[in-house]
Length: 115
Length: 115
Image (tube, rainbow over all chains, first blue to last red; front, top):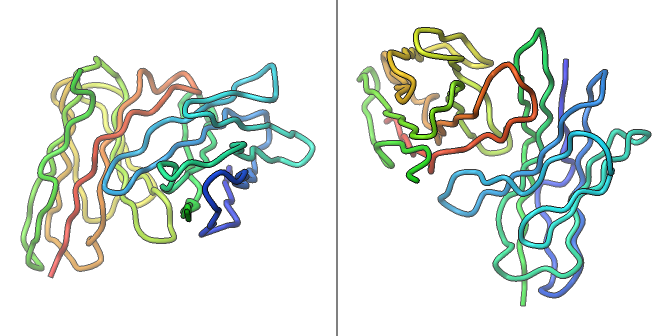
């Protein structure tokens, strides 16, 4: 069965500092991978997704993520964090299991940004 | 575009009461689903539907019922509310269940408290 692990529950960074959020997945084949962001009191919004090809994918709001097959990882990065980036971030893996889309979410990483 | 609309946004129920969370989408998406979000557990799939008249169970279906009479609507019914159903509920939709990698669009959430 597929699974997603986000090892960091909370991360605190200073505004302007770089950010990396970790995500590890378990799936037999090459998965479809996503990062979603949830602002307080809101639903989830797609940041970026990876299907195939270039392993470095660009998303909205200046985020990028790198797929590393050898490490089963899909870490999210941003070079310079803004206070508005404070939110909860979810990694997700999507497989085509028996011909149907099947999405599993990680438990989330809450990002705090300090001035 | 309204996207995915959920109502109500907040609800307090007494144990044993029943209620329905409404969900509607205006994107002509085939696939709709309900998740619950609990602290430290990410999003867990309750029920999903691959089209009008077709529903199936997700990871945590007990205590919930769904139906899909139209493409647009996918209500979630709590049959006899229990305190363990206190949670934030998200309705979601995507273009098709039978193609992996589709972006999932989320509603803004419904905060349910069972006392």
